[in-house]
Length: 324
Image (cartoon, one colour):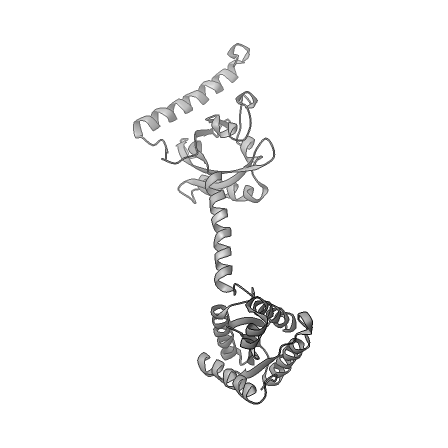
């Protein structure tokens, strides 16, 4: 910086800036408030002189964005960084700073994405506070520290994806990829609570593949698995949008029918039975289903399902390939 070319006013302003910065550094040294954390990704401290809108910072804050140190302007203002914020994070970052400046928050603290030279984004964690005020209490100077937390955020996002996968695995049947026993029961409990509150009808249909042991014995377990998968697909394709079809266990399937009375449920169940009966597997192999329908009358969940189960086995005993 060539001070010889500065006017007297510019020199006085520069002296004021340096005095404020010097006071800050002395204050931090004596009070041991350097805002340092034993975290990886520490990009150093920053200082914002609000009177001149001059930001002093460790060059690492910009170098990690892909810029060379020579590309950093001689005078860096607050907007130099805010204009690089991700559009989705801009308002959040501005609100965090304004809340602190207006006394609504004890510190300025925020995580945001900031654009690199190549146009990608890195995650920063930024924290600071007002350290100097004028005689009227107006903020003059802020000091803070910033961290590159991109690696941590990427790990969090990866963990979130894995958790979503685990949640899906715990809620769907591994073979057929439709809701499993646990999901069916928990969802049915919710439907029963809604039915109790609103007096809306609720029905279920429990199905069992007829002679499934014979399918496995004569065609093999691989073919048996394909039967289970295709039956699950037919159920899913046949039910209404608000219904849930899932694998209850083994070769049994349970269909939850919210808003359907017993007559409507019987109609849907018959349509499922017919679609399965008409489907031709390899070598024109056909299978059938037996089913039992039950309409909710305020009983317990075990009695509700048991009613459908009893009717299912009544269908089995009376010739199979029917819905009762």
